[in-house]
Length: 393
Ligand SMILES: C[S@@+](CC[C@H](N)C(=O)[O-])C[C@H]1O[C@@H](n2cnc3c(N)ncnc32)[C@H](O)[C@@H]1O
Image 1 (cartoon, rainbow, N blue to C red):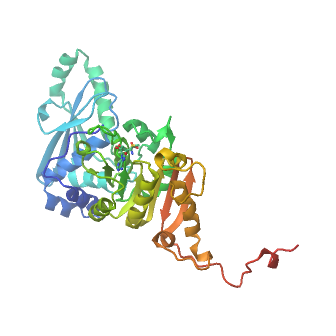
Image 2 (image 1 turned 45 degrees about the horizontal axis):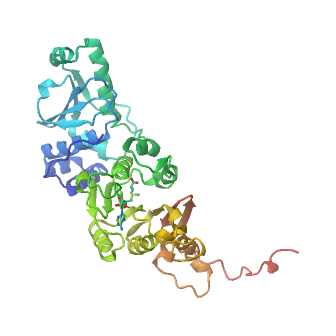
Image 3 (image 1 turned 45 degrees about the vertical axis):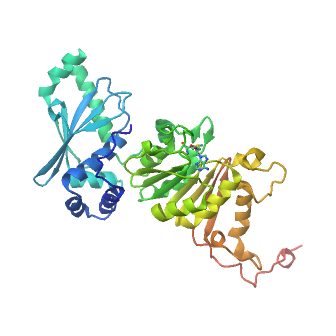
């Protein structure tokens, strides 16, 4: 999974332009602005990322032709079991199968709202002139090569299917520990985030993973990128992780305890639909980050705090004696229950969190704070405030 980096003249704004256009029938205009070559490179990069893990034993070059009026862009994907899918614009004559797409239709398929299509989306052709070289190189028969070609094409088209992998599958595919063995978070994430899956969301995750190692980590960021096919994913870590940058996935170095830094990323990259705190897990940082970033969460979005166990660990600034300590992550969550009910309390002075939190979902070690307008109105004055006045004895 994961392919080559996008062309250097491709920006996040270009990709956002295609995502927006694909959601509003404006693809032809966007291709005109960006050009066929650039649009083709963007969509091929996404296709490479989305390919299902190859299961073909022998490496297969698959030629992809992108047609737009009289113009054409040609790319060659290389797929082999256990290896990352790569793409290049070199040696199309080496490919042993060709898939042709209308560029505008492919952009819509990749970046539009996923939906089932009964009609075909591509033309295909076996390029038999290349077969003798491959069968000789691998020492296999045409029939055996056919099996590998079939699987390679299936991986490519699988990436375009409206049937998308589950979040559990994606956690395993990209190596995120959010599912099984240590954490059991992904079913909770899916329950709350699945309604946003087709939206052009902005996801911010604090804590990229890999700790001091610059090029390691990013497993959950890849998982989010695949889970939200139209989303932009931003990762923040105290360690520089720019080596992980890719289309729809950016990393920024910074300390989550630094409020000025958090304000700057919110201004540059927000507002966000999903914010996940999986960083230092130091309780003071969790509180400061929530305070700084919750105002930059969109209505309808979720603020997620992972690893609540540190609320009980003095080594993380937690408290194993006073369970109501407001300085811990769990203390913050317990206080949010009262903030949600500010309209029912005389003299309550609701802050932004109180006025804009509509739900709190707490599971073992993870919490989801749901943003929305919290102004349903107080229970009317004519309803008695004492049970003695309504309940028969
Ligand atoms: C548990 S890992 C994140 C794992 C990742 N979210 C995943 O699910 O694959 C925690 C990360 O937080 C980073 N970190 C630690 N302290 C931080 C801080 N003060 N600000 C930002 N990141 C921090 C660490 O470098 C580490 O990479």
